[in-house]
Image (cartoon, rainbow, N blue to C red; front, side, top):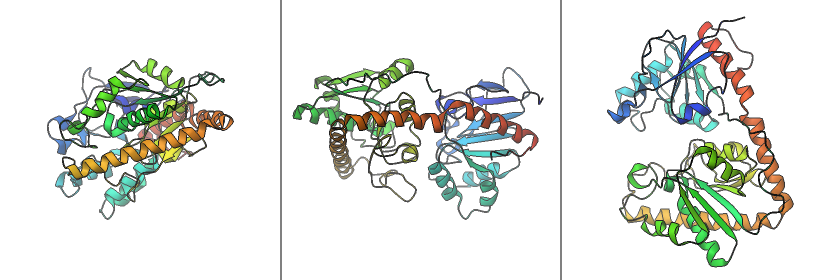
Length: 384
């Protein structure tokens, strides 16, 4: 039997979804240095805490290239290396050559859109073929709770929607508020739970930055009778709330994957999401959820992402119009769903089935354990 490998891995939220839940190998989770706090141009690399001293066979990195001599595999969610618009700088070539070098054993995109972004980012570069030969796709994985549907078969009078996301404006929190406001005005029985740290403006890369833009929306949090703002909650409480809701509301303007969406589907809760990022790869409209259209670029991102005029009134008007359009779309689609309760119940069954087929942890464990072994000893894997 092969001996267990010593694998070094990073802390933080994304790696937990893109790694084995259990492993035959010894995985040490350590803090790393977020060098973007030194300068944004070096966000693409990192240094791990070296203590306690220990010999590692492999590093399983995520998003940031680990500096050192130990071989590594690296997962990523959108762009790699993370230079964000600096592809014409020398740092991009330096980091890309680190990925092309022998020390980097595999490059793992978490979605098909991440793969497309990566290939577009490196198209025409001399290292393109070397990177392409290492590139594979592996979806995130989550624990699938062994539970029955948490929503009572006799649906209550109100339709419960839950929005979860600290980046309130980017994730579509304004849409959630306008859905609640319009429903209240119409007398339509929708209740909206909001779990968010309410981050907006310059702290996010989407949405207007004018001071005061959010004020009128914030007032709705306190005045709408059908909105409950929870602030931040423990993860277990959030998941329980999601499981007791009719829909998770994720009308996001920018997302790489949408981990809350797969957590919801694992608890039978369909997702109402915009059709950007990886979301259309696993949310099928009217089958296991609802997809709302956004204007996209050729990769699959919202076409207005990356604009530098977020401080202008023209951007603000455009953003408000999109919020209104999406809110109206949510209301129409929810109204249609509740008219056919049998179809809605089937949507919940399909959501759970999708989570089990695409994101279950057992197959992911075998994948990662085998990949670690291949990365260290060069053994080819039949699954790859």
